[in-house]
Image 1 (cartoon, rainbow, N blue to C red):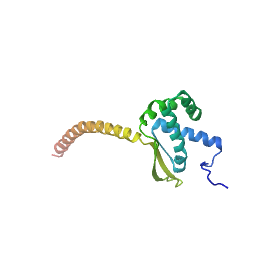
Image 2 (image 1 turned 90 degrees about the horizontal axis):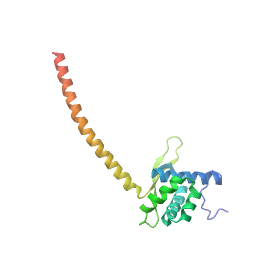
Image 3 (image 1 turned 45 degrees about the vertical axis):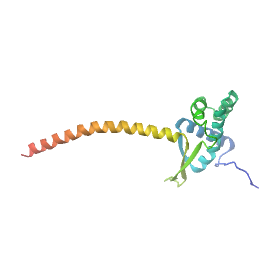
Image 4 (image 1 turned 45 degrees about the horizontal axis):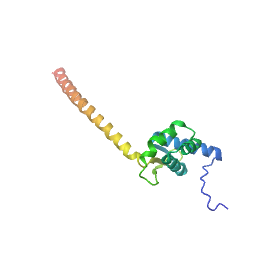
Length: 160
């Protein structure tokens, strides 16, 4: 009987599943947010939480354990140097799953898996990008309105 067996199999062998989850966690560490199916997001979440807990310990043993699971030096470095210190005041629940609806091709439920603290960083980046766009658009707006005036005058002159 399958009572109290929590492993989400995802239709893969054990080794394939282990590699998939490790790669998903590395992508989450690198990009701060990943878009994946809901089942994969639910399977990746516990592993990502465990990696952050290892990162918060900060010991050599924890770093080697994380590397044994993730197998990417740059991901482990970013985990220990950037993500773990950001979560120092939080006692768990480092990730969130945001449901996005269904994928068009096969109607699979899709979700974002993201760091809870990364939302603040994303908002700051969006604000900075919006400021740059508004500065550029104001300058372009002044130039384009002048160009429109000239073209109207040119049209009026050509019409008479």
